[in-house]
Length: 135
Image (cartoon, rainbow, N blue to C red; front, side, top):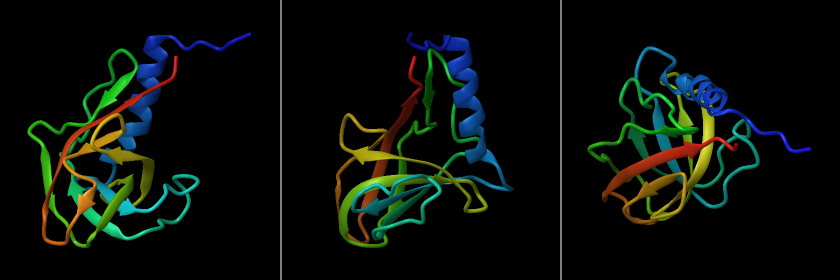
């Protein structure tokens, strides 16, 4: 037998998870690292921190149709702190507490940036962040 989750329950679950990104006294962040994504969101970061985006507060719109979108309109921009190839992303609340990790790239990933080839001092654009809960 296959478990299927109703859209309303998927939305509620996404809202509960992503509201943690809004925890703390200020806005959360999305940090882009080099290398392979770590095993879990509770695992210490690995790779070089390339760029940190400061999110809106709150950072995410209400989930709809089982999808949670990052408020990135207009695009979020940040200046790269290091040079390397973007490999994965981590979202933290304003207190630096890990919330979730995701894939990063220029298409078909959890977080869409303008280029995965990042040079220190370069402006990087985060154009989209969307997570879909499985049905």
